[in-house]
Image 1 (cartoon, rainbow, N blue to C red):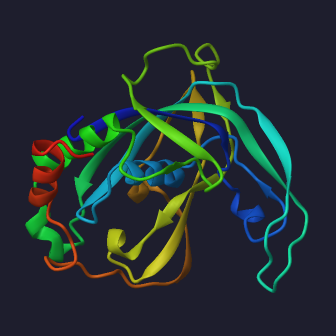
Image 2 (cartoon, rainbow, N blue to C red):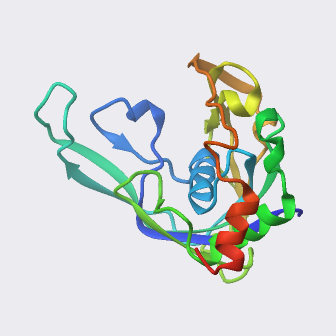
Length: 239
């Protein structure tokens, strides 16, 4: 697919939090990464407000295992308390994604250079990302390497179908929808032979509004152009 990248992301732990357990106290991870968590990983590899990353599919490479830990989170009113967080343990995923231009950002029309964005993204994957990679939570460090999607053996290669029920797909931000509000998307993922193929955000039919929100404005003065970034990373050998 056009403007596509493929990579493997792995780590000792992951916490793709179920929103029902996110407001405080105990936290429990979904069994699989959400679309939004994978989008966050891709944006840590390479992000510009000019483009929108679309997650095409994820391949679950290792068996789904959980581990609970006693945590002492700091409370908003001071002090701390004991809570149990249930993490995914020893995770590895292959991810395929591509980018499209964010046509809602008319103020960034000057930064739409498809070839240079794609080359920078591929270079960023090879470098392990331009920012730190987290698997759903800051305490879950992740690592990125380039791969060919579908290579190697997945633990679930021979399992025809697993249905995970209704879960969060992701969040609609106003600069990606043209609406001045935050919205939560829901969907029903099904894993087939280890692979989950995501529907696009605009294909989700279960949408709930969260609150009002306005996008940040960008221009030449507060955004480095892709031409400048290309010269810095590709031609000068930066990361």
